[in-house]
Image 1 (cartoon, rainbow, N blue to C red):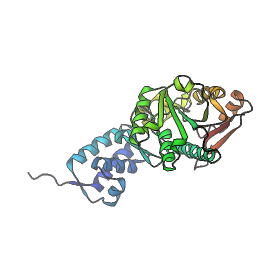
Image 2: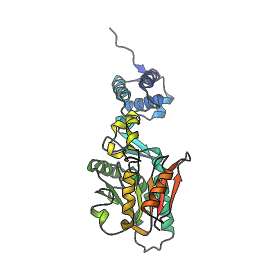
Image 3: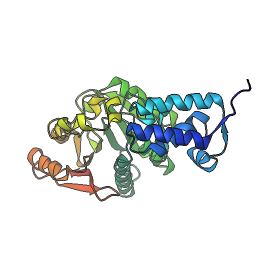
Image 4: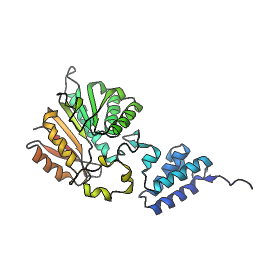
Length: 304
């Protein structure tokens, strides 16, 4: 009996689309394209441009196995082991939260603030000290380091990244090394800014954080893909600001006189974070920066 003819990309995409749509995927076509491209080892645009191309049997088997995993709810990023963020490719797995596009706003605002401070400082001024609290995969601090290197400004900035999870820190270190900024970032296990070098007495000029901010009761209602991510990185307590408020309470002891904190928040937490700042840090100005969709995204907190 002659072997079955090879299958083509278009038929496989339709098969994957139908399966993922039936399973409840919000982006079945995109998921299928990404997983087929990953199985073949090419970019997604190649798949889209060559839907009539034949696909090797080994790649077909890999693709169908990936479709099975996605249909069960596993995030595409974990299946591929990679996620694009701020124009860079980051390794991702269950050790840390998958970087979200909206978090790129935090990197943009930090880059702008570092550039502003560098422009106004004398050449012999101390390095700008920046800490990324709850670094997770390291996406924010690594993207910032790579950007500063492109600007030839990395030597003027001291970068520290903390996380309470040793597993997350290991992944962050891997990503830093992968982007050739491993020696430019110090990684340390710490509950926010409570231990180690984070408590060495030297104040921080910039405190960045993308901490868990999903209200506890809302976590079970998240898409099934979120159940594959660490609950520690999602659950923000009763109102979603429990961990953020703990960090707010540490700022007076840890932030420089002209320091600035930039905290990512949920799109419905603009008023909540302003209220929390007024209660925990009276007289400290707190403004909320929006994302590209015009939604509250980053709290900007200055020392009084």
